[in-house]
Amino acid sequence: MSLSEQKTELKKMNVPFFKASISEEEEQACTNVLRSGWLTTGKETHEFEKEFAQKINSPFALAVNSNTSGMILAMEALGVKPGKAVITTPYTFVSTAASARHLGADVYFADIEKENYSIDPEKIEEILKSPHGKNVAAIVPVHIAGNVCNMKHIMELAEKYNVKVIEDCAHSFPSKTSLGFAGTIGDAGVFSFYATKTITCGEGGMVCVKDKKTAERILQMRLHGMNRDAWDRYTSNKASWEYDIVASGFKSNLPDILSAIARVQLKKADILDAKRKVHVKKYNDAFSKMDFVKIPPTSEGDACHLYILRLDLLKLKCTRNEFASMLQEMGIGISVHFIPLFHFSYWKKLYPDFTKEKFPEAEKKFQESISIPLWPDMTEEMTKYVIQAVKEIGEKYHA
Image 1 (cartoon, rainbow, N blue to C red):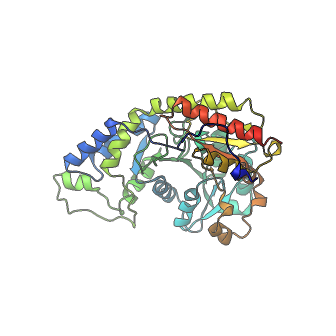
Image 2 (cartoon, rainbow, N blue to C red; image 1 turned 60 degrees about the vertical axis):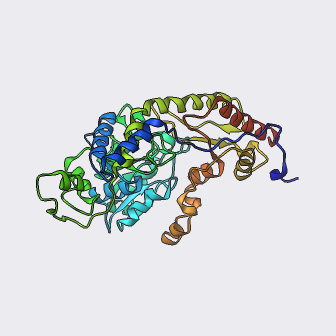
Image 3 (tube, one colour; image 1 turned 120 degrees about the vertical axis):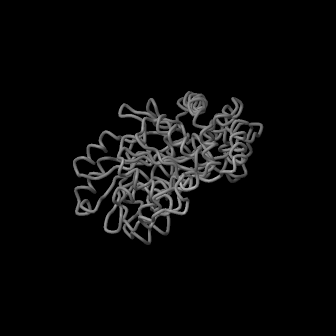
C-alpha cells in the first residue's frame, strides 16, 4: 500500500494554511474611504506612513503596492543598476533577486547558515573578496519567517567593503533586535502586507530608509517620476495640472482603501503577534519531544510569520513530499518556504553554474522543510490536531 493510501486514525479536521484576521474595524475603515470620495493614494496612506514609521522608529516610511515594488525602488535609489550587482540568498521568494534583474543588475548568491535559514555572512564576504566584489552595490539579507539575520556581521561587512544593505523584511514585522527593529538596521528595509503576512491589507508594502535623499528619490520614483503626487495636486491651492517629470519612474503607490485596512491592522499588530506566539509555543513544546522533527530557530523579539518544521529524514521512512502529502490528505494546509532559486529554469538559464551542489545548506533545508498552519485566530483544537497529525505520521514512518 502506498503512503497516499494509508488511513489516518485521527478524526479528520480542516485546518487552512492561513486565514487573515479581519474584523468589522477593517470593514468600517474601507467603508469610510469609499464614502470619502478619495480612493487612491491620499490622506489615509500618508497617515499610515507616519504611524508605521513611528511604530518601528524609522526616519522615513514610504508606502508601496507590494514588497516587490518596494525592493525595486529601494535598490534603484541606492545605486543598483546595469553593471552593478546585489548579493542575496537563493533561499528566498523569487522577487528578492528578480527586483535586481528588473533594474538590469546581476545577482550573486550566498548559501545560508547551517543552523538556520539566514544568509551566511562568511559566504557574503567570500563574494565581496572575489573579483565580483567590485560590482556589488548592495547586500540583501532576507529575514525568513521573522527570524532576523546576523545583521551585526552584515553591517560590519557593508562598512568594510563600502556597500549598501537592503533588508528584505517581507516576513519580519515587527521583529526587533538589540540593533533596533528589522528594516531600520540597514540603509533600507522593505516590508510586505500580502494576505498571509503578520499584518495585511491584501497587497501592499512599505519602504523604510534612514536618509532623506534616498526617501525623496523613492517618493518620486514610486509615481511615474512626478515631483507631486495626486493628493498634493488635487488638494493644493496650486493648479492641479502643474507638475514635472524628473525621472522615468514606476507605478508603485498604495491606494487609500488598502492603507485604511493596514492602519487598523497596524494598531492590532502586537495583539496579532502575541496570538501567533501562543500557537508557536504549543508547537515548540510538542515538537521538541519528537525526535524526527526540529523546531525552527528563533530569537527573542522575532516576529512569528511562519512555522517552518524541519524533518529529520534519517529518522523517517518517507520523503518531505510524502510527509507533506499526508498532512494535506488529513485536511491540513501546508506550504514550502522556499524552493531555492537554483531549481527554477529562468535562473538556471541565466547563470549556468548556479546549481544546488554549490549551495548544500539551502538544498538540504529545502528537502527537509514544511511550513504548517500559523495564524492568529487558529483555535486550540486546530493546533492540537496539527500536532497530533505530525506525531501520528512520524511515528508510523519512523525509521
